Length: 428
Ligand code: GDP
Ligand code: IMO
Ligand code: MG
Image (cartoon, rainbow, N blue to C red; front, side):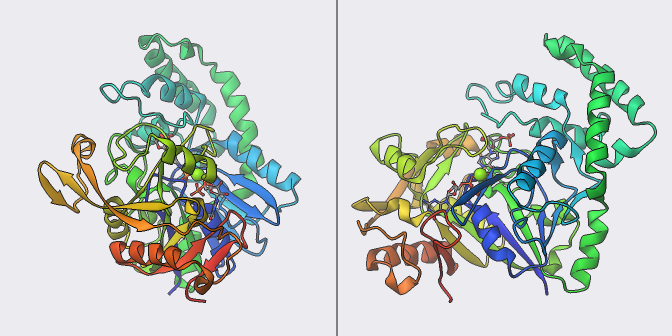
């Protein structure tokens, strides 16, 4: 039985790109199935750093088929830029990249709506989206009336469809007092027609392709984007992204039934980070948070914003590990904690006078909880050169054992640096 999923269990940036790149050699197909160019997945190979937004992190093995499935929202200009950049750096992107004709397309109006509405969907705190038009595109998908899918770009009525949507969006922008009311349908048509021609060789019915693949026992790897706490239905709503970024999103986004998924790898950082607004109980807005930011180079891959940093939150991660059906854990960036004398893990929340390990469903409740911490001794020695679990300092092993215990899953991968090589396979 063939399929494995890689799912971030926190608020994104757990180093999914690195894990997908590592696991790619055991797979035939690597699939992105939700999110879009809000994702920034880093792969470091042979001293070279690659940042991927839409292209699956399996692209570095030419024999592997990469697939962007229908649940992704696609910005064609971003994708083409990424393809050109990879090709220029000697990474082949040709028939090994397939893109679903069902993927919804991001247009300039989506980016403008993201800008206007970011402040307006919460009372007070801004969402702090990546401004890539992700939410507005997913909204149009669900609303249907103004949606355009990649396959529509190849239909004879594409030009009139653009004219119709531009007219409707123009009215919307006029009402919002935005200059984007002056959208030029002819110009947008020409631009997107050009993108469509360049993307044509990649466009396919990926649902049919993936169903054939799993039915013929091909090994498929699903690459989640964002993290489960950003899941539209199960995350810290409304401070979330607009897709199902937890494990529950794999089938909807790819078209592959859950029965084919045999292994779910839950990715966590050894601490916690968050970009953008929303509650974050274990956040450290002090020298510890700054130390983690400096050592972990915690600045957004996509937007370069400083990431908010804090201690590992086992209440949140246990919730998302259960939600995502996680079998094994990959604990990333363990090296970042190396210099700290004492480490804290949040093992419970104090919530309205009682202690609980339940993760609140409403952000206002999450804002009110106080983390209950357990202290563990640090190891205060560099570990980036270590390649075997038994060569880690005892306190680092103790820290991993405790995470594993609290989340109720074994740790299979430990990462001690950004490079492909800086990895410990716990079961090796
Ligand atoms: P993703 O979005 O989940 O793929 O994660 P990002 O690429 O946005 O962020 C992870 C960052 O951590 C990247 O800059 C990686 O190169 C880096 N990284 C990955 N693993 C490690 C590690 O074990 N140690 C350190 N220090 N950095 C790592
Ligand atoms: P990867 O795949 C971290 C966050 C944004 C914002 C919220 C909504 O690299 O882990 P959106 O633009 O999606 O409407 O923004 O979600 N966000 C991410 N944070 N990593 C990501 O992706 C993210 N993608 C979106 O910062 O708070
Ligand atoms: Mg990222």
